[in-house]
Amino acid sequence: MTTTATVTDLLDPASSAYKKARRQHFKTTKNRTHPDADWTPFRAAEKKYKARFPPPDLSDVLDLALADAAREQEVEAGVWRGRADAADVREGGAGCKAYVVPSIPGLVILPGFLTATKQRELVRYCLREHARHPNETNLDTHYLLPPEGLWNADPTLLISPRAPPDPSTSTSPGPRQLIANTPASPTTFHTLAATPKPPAVPSPTVPSLAARALLPRLRWANIGWFYHWGTKQYDFARGREPVGGVLREVCRDAVRSVPWGEVFREGETQSGWGKAGPDWGTWEESYEPDAGIVNFYQAKDTLMGHVDRSEVCATSPLVSISLGNAAIFLIGGLTRNVEPVPILLRSGDVVIMSGPACRRAYHGVPRILENTLPSHLAHSDEEADDWTPFATYLENARINVNVRQVFPKGFEPGLSTATPSTL
Ligand SMILES: O=C(O)CCC(=O)C(=O)O
Ligand SMILES: [Fe+2]
Image (cartoon, rainbow, N blue to C red):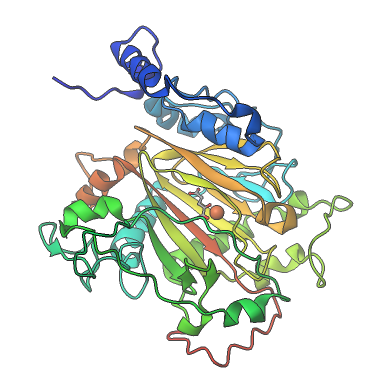
C-alpha cells in the first residue's frame, strides 16, 4: 500500500516518510559531484529551497503572515513556516499593512492584501474567464483548444494536437523558456519592435488528451500586450487585450495603498530612473497595467531565476498576486551574485516590484509548498455551488498573477503599424 507523505511526516526525522525520502535521496545523488563552489548565491539559494531531502529549513525565510494574529490558523494548518524577523523590514501603509525591504529599494510586500472573497473571485477569473481565447496560453502552440477554454470544456472532451504526429522529433509544451534578451528601453524599443516574431512551431509528438488530463499542463496565460516567447519581446503588431475588471481594480488598489514616501525616502533615491527622473510621486495617476502573465504552478513546478526586462518602462510597479498554495519567492539584485532574500508568499499576498533596483532584480520561485491551501479556498460543507472544481484544482496548485506596465508615462511608442484589436 502506498500512502502520501504529509509535510509533517517529511519534517519528522523519526517518521518512515522521512527515512524513505532519505534513502531515495542517497540513491539518486550517489554519483553526483557537487559543483557548489561554482554556484552564484542566487543559484545556491534555488538549490537549497528546491531540495526534496532534507526538506529545506525555512528559518531564514521572511514569513509576514506570522506577524498577523488573524492568520494563525492558516499558518498552523499549512505546517511550513518561516520567520517574521528573517529579514530587515520597515512597516507602513494606509489602511492595510505594507512592508518595505530596505535592502532591495522598491520592493514592497502587502501580506494578506486580498480578502478570501477577492481571492476566490480572482481564482475564478484566472481559470474560467482569462485562460482562454483570445488570451494565449502555453497549450495553444501545441493543441487545438476549445473556444470556450479548457476550464469550461467537458472534462472528457478529447483535445487534439495541432500538428500531425511525427515520431522522429521530440519537443514538448514545457514550462517557460528562459532565453537571454536585450533589455527593452526607450532607446532599444524601435529595433526590438521591428525584430521578426515567427510563430512557435507546434510539437508533432504531443498526445491527444482529455480536457481534465490537459488542465494540469496549463502553465501560463497571457495578459494584455501579446508576448512572443521565442524572442522574449512583446509582439506589438498583434495589438493587445484590455486589462480590466477585477484585475485592473486590484492592481490599482495595491499601488494606491503603498506608502511610496516610505519606499523611496528622500536622500535615499537611487540612480537608474532614466531621463524623466523618479516618478513614484505620480504613480497614483500614471500607473496603468497593460501586460503580464498568469502563472499556473503544479506542486513540483519551479520558476528559474530571471529578470523581467521586456517592458520599456524599467521602474513602474509590477504587481504580483499569489493565490492557492504558498511558495518560496527569491529576490536578489541586478546580478545572480547578490544573495537573494527568501520570502514565503501565501494566498492573498501581493508583492510590488518597482524602481530601478527592484524592477530589474533577479527573482524566481524555487518551490511550491505543498499542503498549504488555506481553508477558505479548500472544499467546505457550505461552499458556493460552483466552487468545488476550483477547490479540487487548487489542492495541488498555485496561481500567480503578474501584471506589468510596458510603457513609461509620456512615452510615444509610435505603433501606427500595429493593429490593436481591442485598444
Ligand atoms: O510566481 C511568482 O511569484 C513570480 C512569477 C514571475 O516572476 C513572473 O511571472 O515573471
Ligand atoms: Fe518575474
